[in-house]
Length: 458
Figure (cartoon, rainbow, N blue to C red):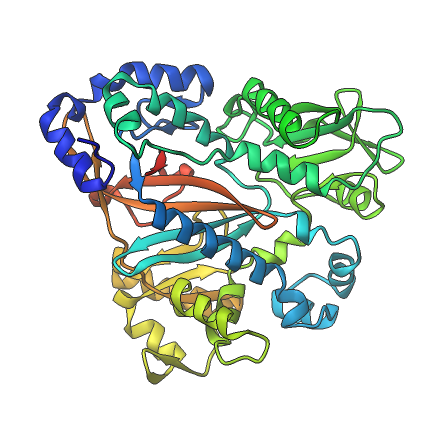
């Protein structure tokens, strides 16, 4: 019997109780560490733990996720032009930019908006998947799709992964990334090859070069070139952010002129790199315009603009289905679940129904989930949000937990964030972060102890 659904997998585990034992997966963890040394069989500072049970989705869910992620990303990429007509003054005011000059520079061509890498963070609910935020550039998690083949060939899973007429499938994230680079290259080197740098964080962390499998990147790039652009010459480098250098507005790394940069660090672009990009000397696949496109206030714009003439009927349906109720934290009246409220009173009194987030928060910081904190913590967050001017309040989304392996032996429900990658208009796979429900604050982030899950489709 072929088993692919979550319920069928749990039935399979009942017939194979050794799958509840952490020690059963020691070879799997060792294979993962050989690929990416920063992964461990338990979470420790600077490392990622790995969930040894797969997360299964059916083909219809996969297609729906891909359509939703691509359509929502495309819509948010267009916000500065469709909602603000590209007007620097309006953009500066809404996004609290430091100056009119910065706003004008962000909107000046090239903006790089079409080449941005994106990841939407979704929760699975009883009514489908809902988008909590959309991030652009400097994304984590791209490399972890490399673990899927380890699961497919793990002896305990061979019957499941290859049996019957619907074997497991997974979406690699690296091949779509490199196809995206090949489509969006603009810089033409005087002499080949085109040098593409994957730039990571400086220092010793899961964001540093040790967390990235360069041989796998190189192999995937070579395969992508052979299948989509035979004869192209691209040299790949992996280096930390502090090894970038600049001469006459050109970007260099390890003695070589760089023509393209995929920035996977958690650091700002920097003035010199920004200037080089604007002058046409380097391609950025995480351009500075991502700083406003990734602002969480964009979801508030979409949520409160459901009747806007700037949106088509199809886009309004997309927002109503995929985006939770979201509003900027400003004084005045708002509609919530069909009733009018004073926003300040709504936020203070409806803690169990709401989440507060800073518009530019990263890594799960400045996110306060009402049902997961006490009233004093919530009231302090309310005061900070009202004073800050750049926070949003979002309807709390009750996620459907999944039963996954936990501890030395056993299983328990886990909270899960499904990170959906989009490169241009192509779906780029999924990065899953999760944590046991009882131990989770609801904010699932590597720095706060989340582990990696590996998704499959059937």
